[in-house]
Amino acid sequence: MTLDDILLEAEEKMMKTEEVVQHEFAGVRTGKASPGLVENIMVEVYGSQMRIRELRGMRPRCIRSKKRFKKPTSA
Image 1: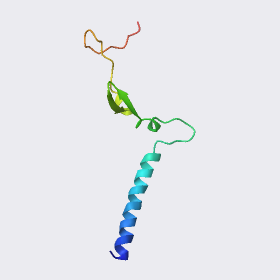
Image 2 (image 1 turned 180 degrees about the vertical axis):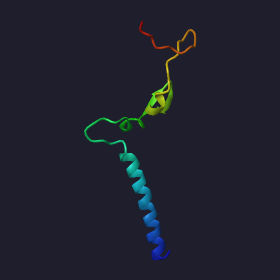
Image 3 (image 1 turned 45 degrees about the vertical axis):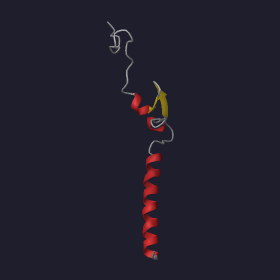
Image 4 (image 1 turned 90 degrees about the vertical axis):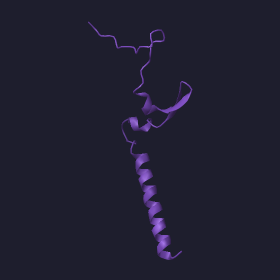
């Protein structure tokens, strides 16, 4: 391996590392909470692992009728 090959490989690895760090820090905000801070946390749901961000589309089902609950409407 030549010196140029080593430098090229090191540069590629550094660029990939920088992309990962930027992605990880994207959710960090100073002064206010951000949903990005918790969206990748894994939780157990009905016996399987899911990310919190995947839960936002889930709604509870009524056990007897297997229909989704509806939000009550105010009169």
